[in-house]
Length: 239
Ligand code: PXP
Image (tube, rainbow, N blue to C red; front, side, top):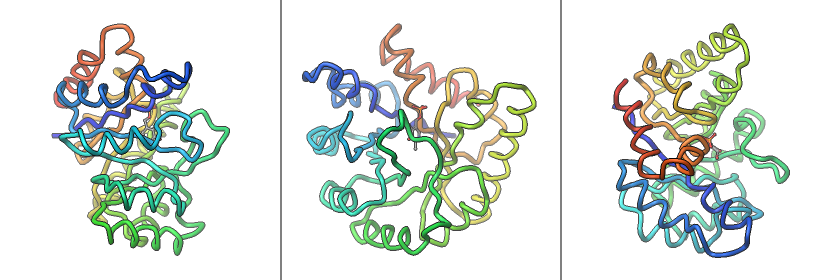
């Protein structure tokens, strides 16, 4: 049965909007776990625009399930991950001006670099996931670089406008899941998933975990975080 991993960056984004100390993403992580989330994700960006070093250190101490640190594959972040020791790291491309992670990693462009990053993280006992587009050649490159897991980018599917686009993009994800399974990789999926477009994923039972942030936090503002997390888990576990 697939698991829900909750991304709590938005809680920190609200805090940073006023440069104050509330709401606290650490408290949100506890509530998400109590509601049934099986992993907490946070993205430590180079500009610290939401999650900061204090959050990461405290999250490491209080999280009872698993901590997934999203980060760019750069020296500063590899060092921090080595000190904090999250249960896993998800490598993502990062651009300063983007509103959120825009595309998957281009592992093929620099396989040697990614292999070295995996080696350093694995040396600290950290499992490594690569956020990649649903492109079998990128998945193969991630596999060769030593990835334990691939997180398949569902954003293009989520942004589809026509039914035909949605169908084509979903089929690309389905093929990427098969390719990942053939390579014996762990399989996650995420980006842009919500309470409606998640339903099609019942046809892809090989996906083990869903990484979801925005739609859960958007619902949480209206109905509370506990209920928003439980509602999403109800859909995922009900597949
Ligand atoms: N996976 C990755 C790699 C991401 O960067 C994000 C956004 O922070 C998510 C999943 C969650 O996406 P969303 O907030 O659209 O649910």
